[in-house]
Length: 364
Image 1 (tube, rainbow, N blue to C red):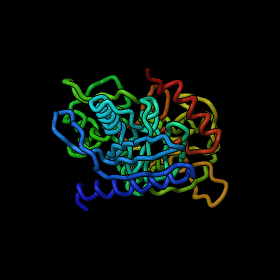
Image 2: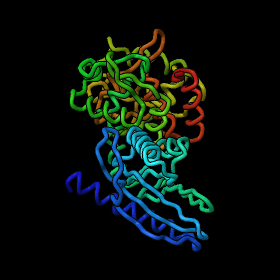
Image 3: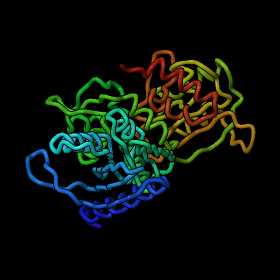
């Protein structure tokens, strides 16, 4: 479907979704519904049309609802819609009830509407419609498939390489080419991530380049949509424990002593980054070059039960190249990667994640 046709289809569906919500109020009479039914002035002085206009009557009092449709409904587009609605009402000196519509509006977009005194409606079932004598509000966790695909793309392994670089120092500005080199991701992919961050109002661009403005919101969203590292997972048993195990890990995972790349992950990494709770299983990320040396050094045996070591061989080994090395400690996964992994463990894992974030991932 062409973008224009897609937009018209979303407008049509939203118009009837809005009508369906209003029909839930028995005393409310719907006088008319128009899609692009009334002309208004755009910001450049030319005429364009209201996307959706509905007239209703409640106990003899008439009200007009106007809805500006944006697709996609990211915060940047929603902010533009709010400005257009306020501009229309100012130019036409009308007291219409303004709403923003989209196929899906994130919590951030909805809160943006709320703070601006504007209602909202989307095709997933979220809405807030309020005027004299009427208040309709619904929230749903459902997300359209297109939105799920968009978020998977934004937090894909390749995009994750870019995001981890940005989160190392959110105050730093990046040119696209420099960010591409630092993350080892193509310029085209970096540009797509850049656009997504700007649309969500997590980043801004100035003469110095791209800079994160809402790193906490970005990390929250990534955490909520994070998928554990994909790859081959194997369970092992070792008789080593305590300081002896730590010493072997330090010696074995050291870059100078190992072909390939390996590092501790999850609770095992958090133990060295921000100690909180010790796990029962030692978790390692390793590529296929490093695994034989790790198995030999730790004297690992395949375990069908009672495993105390897990080795993950990532499909995408980029996270192995971003490992952290401190004197006297084995190499560990980056704070961002460790935080994401911890959050998707049990309740104790989430407590450890919160502790690590407080210690290492706090930004103003």
